[in-house]
Image 1 (cartoon, rainbow over the protein chains, first blue to last red):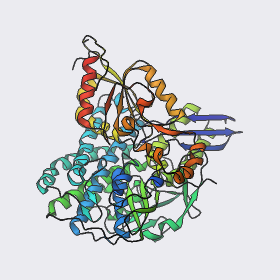
Image 2 (cartoon, chains in turn purple, orange):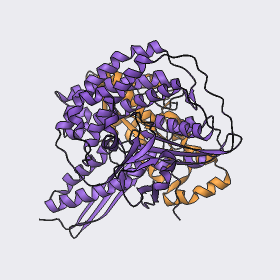
Image 3 (cartoon, chains in turn blue, purple):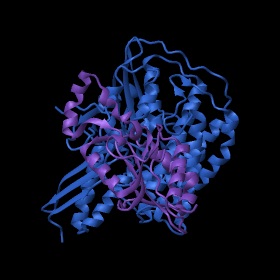
Image 4 (tube, rainbow over the protein chains, first blue to last red):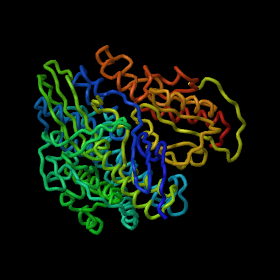
Length: 428
Length: 171
């Protein structure tokens, strides 16, 4: 029997980064409203960066988010480099890639082991794991540690990394230290290959047609060259903003976005759907049976995609480190001018966009920051609506629906700290 | 700095009941905490009961905590109410990271010039933010602090070690 009236209210969804509430209203057997509310308080970074020196900006914006702080630093640096025409050496490019890979390994591992895996084993928490499950918790520590060490050696720290600056790195790592990390990276790879099997065997499925958007390029390095969409578009990074339509979501502290008239999804699933052929050759070989599952509309495959990205990040890091010859290199001196620059990179959860305008004294005139989770917000609501409608018609209990919704939200790996803190919100 | 010591005898098998809470901040110290688990989980799982830790579990219990580790600054009445509730339910409260200890950078809006204040005024009203952002000890008693942006790992381990001794937990 179809339930006529249901109110679902989830306060403070657990095992995600930041705070989110969800309210769903069902009347006469139809989903009437889905309100996904990002409830982290605003910290007004967009306003606070105005007048700030371009030299300190990458460190300031890092404080927007603890888990993807490196993404903010690197995207901000890219925007500054483009604004001030800062040359970036080959060595600096290699170190940037290693910085991004270290972040992806640690951040994705946090999500696929500590946040999403309890849902697969139908446990409330990794702390409740028993028997063989506990091995995956131990594995998570080896994987996260390897990613943490990689960014610590290259960028100075895994959270709020101090070394990356426009045009390069203020400290050049010790190549011996980097090479000594290779066995640890290989061990982490072995562990991740096991978790891929767990996620691939998992029969969770939820599909809805949507547009996927991700950075493309000859190399799958999260820094990208242009933007790809599942509709076949190829868009220049500097034109990305023109394609986005801001949508005010009155009950959430973050605005959402649509891509033209479409809702869209960013993140690991989008990246593998659009760019899997550019993964590292070793990753393509060893993950071949899993890669056959992409492209896919199944949102739960986002977690498998994250795992494959860890393998890729490890494979490419090992290749880079093995061939790397490091020399002392001073970052270029910044020549201030009245200008504007755009940075677009892949953060763990998808495309991160920075537009920074500077004055001739090297101070920020204005900044726009658009984060992946706010871009995924509308897509998540539509997914929630569809899943609730289907479950209501199937006669599923409210408690089970609620748990299914939490699992769905977690599979996106949302980052609410990011989503609420940057946006310029014009509510009037 | 642990201000007031609770002296308890060591009890075999006893665990320190802890809570981990995040308010207005970037949750960098939470990430550092999840990274500390890489090397300390085995040891902590024997002596620490992670009774309230939303980042790792859905079912959490607030009542009867020994120590509450609180990250972030307080920027709304909703957060203030929750902080008071935590303080009521824990024996010791530790401020974690820069925003909890000093207010900043979350409190950056406290010193905005007039024109920026005006720009954000409607957002503060719309989302029921407080007029000013507060560090924890502006509002509740804080027993110890772990400063840093993110928190200093060594200082955290030192404070946790002291709490284990104070609450009579065998390591």
